[in-house]
Image (cartoon, rainbow, N blue to C red; front, side, top):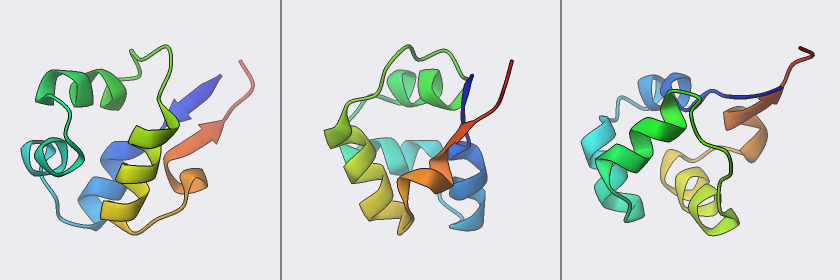
Length: 67
């Protein structure tokens, strides 16, 4: 199972969901889907933008855990 640790990175950078959504160009609703583990996929472009803005690596956001 892939776990999305977006909320952890946002807390470390002291960034709100609204601000991050605006800066990466997605709706707050779509960002919420990512944060709440409801997403079935993420575009590399979106992941790139998140990593750029939060100054992190994809592995800081995406984590693999055995079911």
